[in-house]
Image (cartoon, rainbow, N blue to C red; front, top):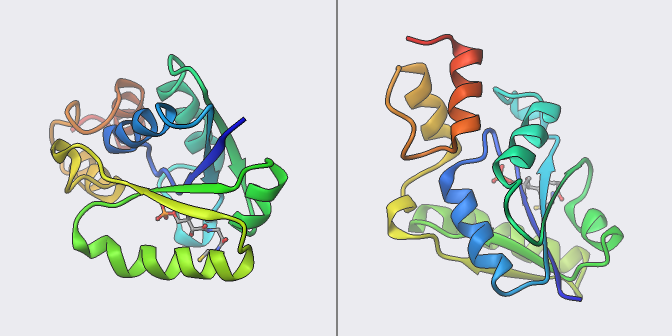
Length: 160
Ligand code: PNS
C-alpha cells in the first residue's frame, strides 16, 4: 500500500491544501494529513481545532486520514509506515524553505522521499496566513477556504 504523509500547520486548512490532497489521493492509496502541533508559532486555531477542521474539510474524501503529530516529522512518517512526504509548491518564495526542509528530512531519514505537488493556478498565491488576514479584515473567504473554516473563522474573530 502506498501511503503518503502531507504535513503542515494547517492554521487553517484552505482550498489550496484541499487541491493538493485531491492531487495526492489520485497517486497514493492513502494520504495522511498530518497536523503539526507547532504551538511555538502561536497559531490562531489550537492544535485540536486545526485537526478537527482538517477532518471536517476532508470528510468526503476517500483515502484521506487526518492525524495530529508533535515532534519530528520523519519519526511520525516512520511510525505510519510511510516513505513519502508531500508538500505543495507555489511561487518561488516557497522554494528555499521547502528545499531546506526536504534536505534536512532526507539527512534524518534517507529512505523518506519528499514529493512536491503544484496546486491549481487558482490557489497559487493562497496561504493560511492570507486567509487569516482576510478574515481579520472582514473579507470574502468562500473562494479561499472550505465552508467549515469560514464558519470557524467567523466564530473566532467575530463577524465584521
Ligand atoms: O505548514 P507549515 O508551517 O509550512 O509546515 C511546516 C511543518 C509542520 C511541515 C514543519 O515545520 C515540520 O515538519 N515540523 C515538525 C518538526 C520537524 O520535523 N522539523 C524538521 C524538518 S525541517
